[in-house]
Image (cartoon, rainbow, N blue to C red; front, side):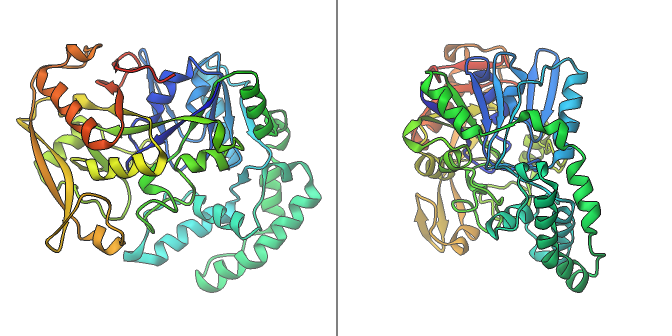
Amino acid sequence: MPAIAIIGAQWGDEGKGKATDLLGSRVDYVVKFNGGNNAGHTVVIGDEKYALHLLPSGILSANCTPVIGNGVVIDVDVLFEELDALEARGVEVGKLKVSASAHVIASYNRSVDKVAERFLGSRRIGTTGRGIGPTYADKMNRIGIRVQDLFDEKILRAKVEGALELKSQILTKIYNRRAPDVDAVVEELLAHAERLRPMVCDTGLLLNQALDRDETVLLEGGQATLLDVDHGTYPFVTSSSATSGGACTGSGIPPRRLDRVIGIVKAYTTRVGEGPFPTELFDDFGAHLSKVGAEFGVTTGRARRCGWFDAVIARYAARVNGVTDFVLTKLDVLTGLEQVPVCVAYEVDGVRHDEMPVSQTDFHHAKPVYEYFPGWWEDISEARTFEDLPKNAQDYVLAVEKMSGARISVVGVGPSRAATIVRHDLL
C-alpha cells in the first residue's frame, strides 16, 4: 500500500485530528512528521474528548502503531505527560515509536523563544514560547540535540556545552537573563532517557518496511500550508515544513511512495498569532464563528481569528501539496446564517488576483472579493449522507469544491467521529 499524507490547507486548526482519527482505525501506522507541542489536535470519540499536542492522533486507535518521525522536535517532559494522561484514561500507549534522529527541545531553547518574542515587541511573530523555533534553528546550525544523544552522556554533554557557548552569550548579554548551567541541562535531558529508550528506533526503516509489506502508512502534518516555513505567509509561520514535501523529509519515506494527499479545510477560515489574514472579520459575524465554532487553540488556549472561506488559499494549498482530496470540516458552524460569503479572489491596488500574490506586501494589502451563497437554517449535525443536507448546504459544498481545485471527499457536520459525511472513500 502507498503512504497517505494529511495536510492542513489553511493556517492550522482545520480539524486534522478528526480526519486522521477517522482513517487511523483503517491504517497500520500514523506518523507525525513535523512540528512539536506548539499545536494540538482535538479528537472526540463517543463521549470522550482528547486533546493531543505532541502525540500522533493514531495513538487513540488500538490497531495502529503511532510514530513520531525525525522531522519533529520533542519536549520529552511533555511527551511523558501526555502518555501518562492517556494511560490514566485507559488508552494503550505502549506501541509508540520515536525516531532516533528527532531533535529534542532543551530548556535553554524555551528561554530563548520567550525572551526573543518579548524583545521583538510589535514585530513579534506570535510563537507559543515552547522552544520550537530555536530548536529547529539549532538543527539547521548543526548544534542540536537528538534523541539518540540522550543515550550517550559523554556526547550529550559535549553537545550541550557547544550549544551553550552561544546561547549563554545571547541570554546574558542581549536579553539580560541568567546563563543556563550545563550540568542542570544535561541532568534534565537524561531524566527520561531510560524510559524513552524502548520506544526509539530507525523509524524511516520501520515505515519503508511496512510499505514493503503492503501496509498503510498515514502521515499526519502539524500546523498547515500557510504556516509552512517555505510556502507559508513568511515570516508569520512555523519553523518546519508542514506541506506534503515535509511529509517525506520528516518521515524518511520517499516521494514516489506518497500516493494520496488529503487537504483539510474548514468551511470558514481561522488563524492564531500574527500575520495577514484577508478575510478576517471584526464584526458580529466573526464573533458568531468564534463562539459557535469554539475557536480557541487546543495547545495555547488563545482565541483564533475568524474569517470567511478563502478559495484562493484553498487553490494554493491544492497546488503546493498536490491535494487529491479535501476534507471540509465544521460545515455545521455556518448553520443559521442568511447568506455565506466566500472569498474567490483578492483586489490589490485595483488589480484582481485569482491566485496568491507573489509578494508578502501585496498579500498584506489584499482585499477579499466575495461571492455570496444562500444560507440554511436546518440542523445538519445528524446528516450522514450528502443528500441529507439541505439544498443550500449542498450547493455551498459544491461551489467550494469547484473553486478549490480538488474534490471534497468528506464533510464534517459536528465534532464527534460519527458526525461525518463520506462522499468518496479516502483509502
